[in-house]
Length: 494
Ligand SMILES: [Zn+2]
Image (cartoon, rainbow, N blue to C red; front, top):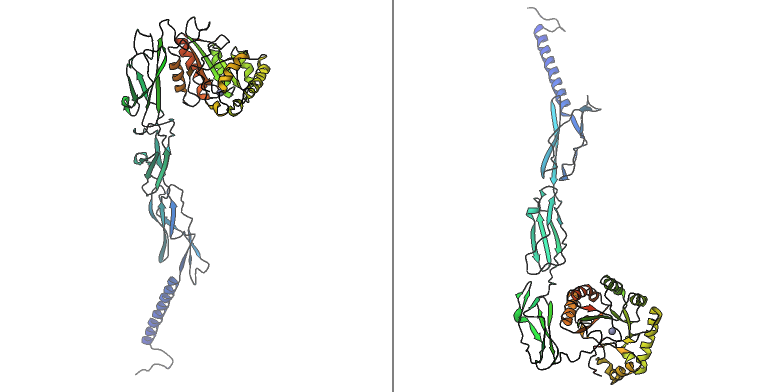
């Protein structure tokens, strides 16, 4: 038997040892690889937060993300990796979008994600076309001047606008697809400034001789733009004594449900057997054609007087100004220069002063006459009492003063004038149309008319052009007052 030498391995043992060595090496390599792979880390650089909110319609670009691979042995310094981005956020559309950044490398891959939430928090915008009408009749369907609604996400939402009208406020509301609500409001100028209309049957001015005819109400109708037929609401005031010659006026008044009032008048003139009407004065000016209108303006001059003078000039109509001391006494010169009559009204127009005594009255008008002299070069001999000769206010300050003054002014060479046609502009109305109607109705049928207006009232001055046009069309002559004109005196009441 052959024995192996000591220290020497048999071939069989050698083979076994080799196998063990290789196995050990393989195991070591596997362990190293495992260790190496497990210990590698990927670092993403520049990642956004996990959730990003972006307003719809705005721009959004995902950030630049880079990545590095780091390991214990080989990649201690980090090895750049190629990053791939998957996914896209559509900022034009509300929703949630996932963005994923991924890397792959030897024996591994990794990824990170983020959610981009595209939201719409912007309400639509409502645009109202401005209301340009001065008024909208109440109780009627509101004819909307127009509106539109635009949303950043939904586009034109005009058709979705809901309009609610409550009282005078129209509210427009619209909601976009994200639930954002927009509202807009406008005030509707609900108003009915249109007065009712009264139509008189028969003639507006009736003239006859006593005993030859009688006045019987020919009737009337009244309609309103909103109320319709309101004839039954007309109030008739005034009466005619068919046996007594004179001027009579019947007034027809009606109010609509909105408070607008209309008054029209019918003039009835009853002549006596000689063709005269009591109260008419004989005057060389009015005895000819019998159609004379004296336009008179009290309490000016004022800022409106210039416009008035322009209108009078346009039609070559001469009028009369009963002036007081105002801030525009300079216009008195223009009045005179343009052929109008400048006459005395009062320096102060203060009833409590001028009607305390005759001395006080004359001191007042003398001072006013000085101003007239300064402005026109001559004194006036024509005057009108503040409040008219028939005023009763003066009785508070001195009993009987109007009766005394009426006589005293004539003794001093003055002629005083009242009026027989009132425009109503001293308190009866503030409407230009009503002033026009009052004057025209008052003049119709009269032999002569002394018309009372105030050139400190713009609305009254505004009626003058229409009054002149009416007068000229109807054959009237406009004259300024003179010493020869009829005084149109009222009955003295104090
Ligand atoms: Zn006055």
